[in-house]
Length: 147
Image (cartoon, rainbow, N blue to C red; front, side, top):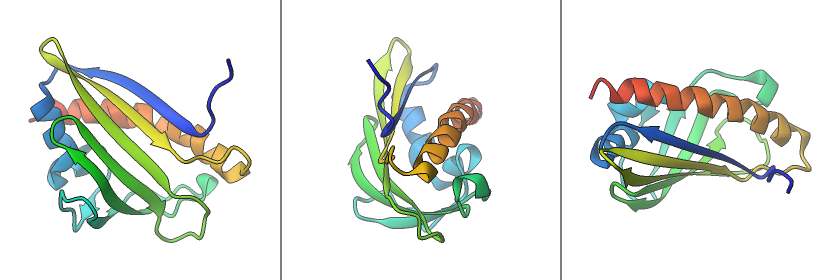
């Protein structure tokens, strides 16, 4: 079976209750600790906000993300759209965090969807983001330890 190049899947366990993980996913000051600084964030479906990180020219990423909240199921699911705010790069990505209680902790499933395997820049971005999400998940674990 071949790998699906349109999506990145991450499965990560955290030794924290879903309510704590949910806070890290949805409170601006906590998001800034593990992902990137957010501006004008409000936990409301349809709300648009901005995130600012480090530019990555190899992935044609300006460092500024235009995001929109697409779905919310408190302590269970958060889905956002994600698009480079500065480049005219094709594609709008969807990122979904799904939380499931597991013992005294939480199993988090992340899906980053929308890569087009026919676009070389999407394949580069997918490769970079596959590694990036692994690093970001570690940073989330570090942030959770401070809550």
